[in-house]
Length: 631
Image 1 (cartoon, one colour):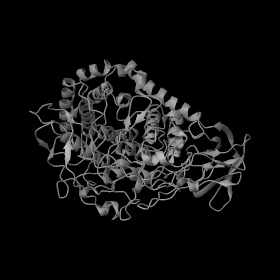
Image 2 (cartoon, helix red, strand yellow):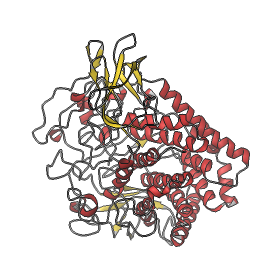
Image 3 (spheres, rainbow, N blue to C red):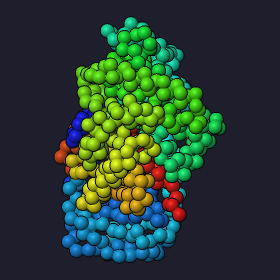
């Protein structure tokens, strides 16, 4: 895949290699950022453009745009219910909430908000939060314009809780994806088990000069739209899933993620299903550890993928390319240490032997990283897969130390935590969010939520940093027309994951304090993802009236091959990216406002790919928002 390279604040860039969709295979539907003014309301039209002869055009979401932007899936009865109206009107406008029968259920006047910096649109806000009745097919009408239809119901997010997590079973490598669990359209044979034409992943050699042996690195999740597997991206993704379960357990709601709740082969084995899914990746991460007696023993290989970029579309089991292990790195090794230590802590009540194995791997990795603190993945290693280069790993040391301390309580790990500059740094939690390359926040969240032996004053400070960051996100949202928890300059590669990760911070603050404003911030973040945005588009496949469905993927590639499916429900697109780092985006989105720099085209890997580290926080939030409010 093309790496989601979040460099240190505030930019995000991704390096590409050969194997992208060629210009002749692109769909041509585009999104215009200019608006036509009609009766005071602004309506964004679809872009013109001739479709490529080699592939059908991507769906043009702007064709269905209304100036009344809502969460197209709906709202919770007890939650905030706000919508954004794009209009140049300088005075408040009348609004009506109408039921499916057309009856007026509520009414009021809009609040003028002015120009939204990220979209460039003049906006009003409608607030109908006081309406708490349930139903389906509601429509919000403002000055004669109607929104997409939506529901108001308490079980609104129950389906997304399951679908967002099911994404990871779909992405599994090394096992058949069973029709009985996913349906015939998404079923496929196991990929990369050494069955022809595959050449791996059970006996994978290193790149030339890296090692003189082979390694069994089967399993794990395909990282994104390609067939690569990357330890640093796997690390943050598996941490997020396990943290989701740990948070739910603290809240007393873990049964919704428990055994036999998900569509996976392991259901019924006595272990919570979300942990079974995480274990599929954890097993792979531990297989990436350099064996004892070899150079760099205990470290983790940085990644494994094809020797050259995989063509699109390519089903995993039909990939004929040789696979290669890439040089170990300090960052990958610390990801292994952190996630294996978290495994030891959270898995212990369900599988003590596995937890012990995880802790052993974590200790070994920590020791190896301490012995090799500056072995960085090079940014030039981008043939066949993203480099995931990261030359600042002090944050990874902090994260790994916190997880080892939380798992063991041992003084050596506590000292590593308290001596790290990240322990008191204001940069651990920032307005633009955390990501695979910036992991200090993960350590901060663990220390804030997991009982530990730090002094009470230290714990108060750590928790206060979480609530302060959450308050900062709420302030950012309050200053915008669309209430998005990232600043106007935050629309970078994978911006939707910045939204979801910042929403996790707000949800964690809610868990620490019980203050409803944080839960409201999380729900309004979901509103943005599900349609209350400048494109009037849900970024989650299968959810909303108009949703993304041509995400960049080598198997879910219906836009290029009608015999292949679109992504399954619950798949999150990367989202607007003002960097325009692929040819499709450059052709159709030049001049776009930051929040509008997105196109639902399979060729736009910089705005429309799916990845494990974007779907993991979506699954975290779906589990949180699906919970019924505290009594």
